[in-house]
Length: 271
Image (tube, rainbow, N blue to C red; front, side, top):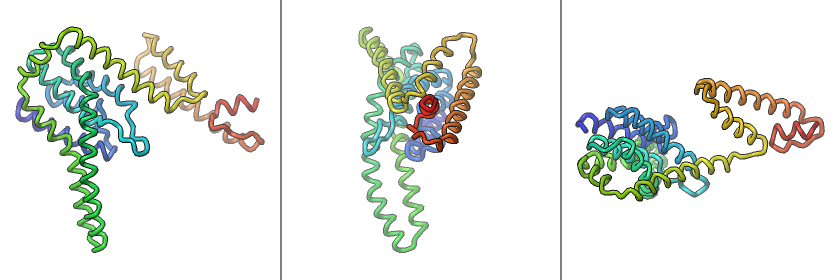
């Protein structure tokens, strides 16, 4: 990669690391991070395809209670960089993408370790902010906050910078040295991980009134004449129908029936 591309990749990685904590612009999401890295390295199509595949895996990654989810930021950035290096080294784009998807999960675990290190260090920063608060030093508190969030950005930017200097021949040689059974197995495993991530999302949001919408979505997606815009309009319409039924159930909640939390179920029970 050219020096300008390396600099832009590091900037994207830095923003992705910060967004892993801020959650404002979603730069850490695979679809966004991989697309941006694809754009700055001259491989936008491959970046979008990789980001879409990794996004299906990351759908089930969420911080629940004290459990910290795998790090989507490092997985997205590092996978995209390795894919670009492999493609620039002469590897087949499809093969490079498959390998990048396969290494995403181990990279996310490594990112989780880095996250825990940064959060441990941030504990000391909190004590520093406490001292600033005791001295009415608001500027000091802001400085500590900036240092802490920049530390999260460096958590992704430093590994990304290191990966950018890996020779493309080394990545290509490693890909070519992989036996067919291993590359095929990683492709199958990557597909299974996508299914598991999506199943985790379904398990969290599944209720008896949303299953018909879930099944209807699959049926509509199978109609080849419908474009993505048409599917989006149908989904938006179904959402408005659902909200209307929910409002109807709320307005009729004073009739003596006890709501179960399922708007469609309450309407059916009342009749």
